[in-house]
Image (cartoon, rainbow, N blue to C red):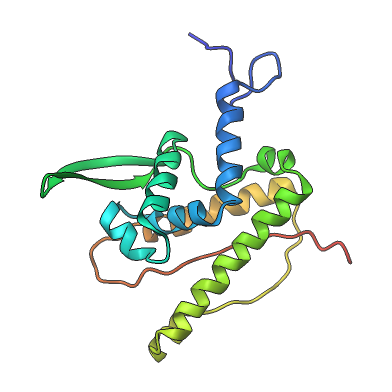
Amino acid sequence: MSDGTTSDGAASDGTTSASTTAGRSAIVETVTHPVRLRIIQQIGGRNLTTVELREALPEVTQATLYRHVSALLEAGMLAVVEERKVRGAVERTLALGEQMAHVDQEGLRAMSDAQLRSAFLVFLGQLAGDLDRVIDSDDADLRELLGFGRGAVYADVEDLAAIQAGLEKLLAPYRQDHGEQKPRLGLATVLLPDIGS
């Protein structure tokens, strides 16, 4: 039985369902908030306990971290996959929820110019912070795992969908930690139309 919405969250009359709108709003709020974005980035592709998350983000106070984790859980961006008692307290293990920290085309169109600039600056700031941590580690071997570059592709919306599907298939085997002691790498992508050409 149909609930009156299509597979992309749009209602059968062409409008957007309230739950879809709320989900997009939560995603937009996440990518424009540096602490929430860092939480999502840390957990992406693995499960972390709240203790491990605190250790990964030592500059974030415990109260602030828990407040944002609760908000992400409520929004479906995170999910609790395990709970266990540790010295009388309940320790939760977190994973990414059904909503991902990715803004789709509808979400991008819904963002104001200021929100879009803010989200992109947060994104760039997180990359700069990650690079600082690599440099400050004094581990020269990490340079072998570091790279960045820029190029051009000629593609329309349909081409981009095919490229994304191909990349997802290519990267899928590498998105989970299989216990082989391989280092965890951050992979960032930016796609910008070249207005000057």
